[in-house]
Image (cartoon, rainbow, N blue to C red; front, side, top):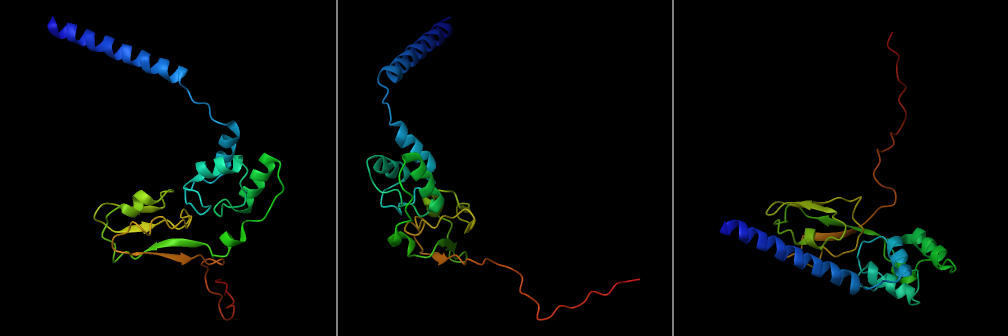
Amino acid sequence: MSTFVAVVLLVLLAAACGALLGFAAIHFKVESDPVVEQIDAILPQTQCGQCGYPGCRPYAEAIANGDEINKCPPGGEAGVKALADLLGKDIVPLDESLEEAAPTVAYIREDECIGCTKCIQACPVDAILGAPKLMHTVIVDECTGCDLCVAPCPVDCIDMIPISDKGWSWPEPAQRIPVQQVV
């Protein structure tokens, strides 16, 4: 019988705490600016800091307060166009000081990696694969080149390498060899 009473008292206590939290959530709710929400939805959410702000949300708040819309290299020209359409501003090219650097991607020298996972924790887009005490590698197509994984690496085995515009392809043969038909 005493176990039943204890369970009932715990259920009543949990219900009272839930009701109190529900009341507080409704009455102390902080309304956010819907324009900031829309701007933040357009930004790429890489949290890279290349715009000079610690993440996409602070940059969205700065844009809503009058900052320039052309400071997000991962968003590119498409992001600037979408922000200009949303805010009714003129489309301006990306900030030249941000564009000067060639786009880069992280490269982990796997033979030097100790598997500490600090780079995985720092990557805002989950572009690094690996397991504790095993080597790590970067998914190149997912990496935004934000450079946030380099600083936490204790063995300095991460390099930022430029992305080639051409990409990899088979080399062209010197001359075409005609295919013989088999009869």
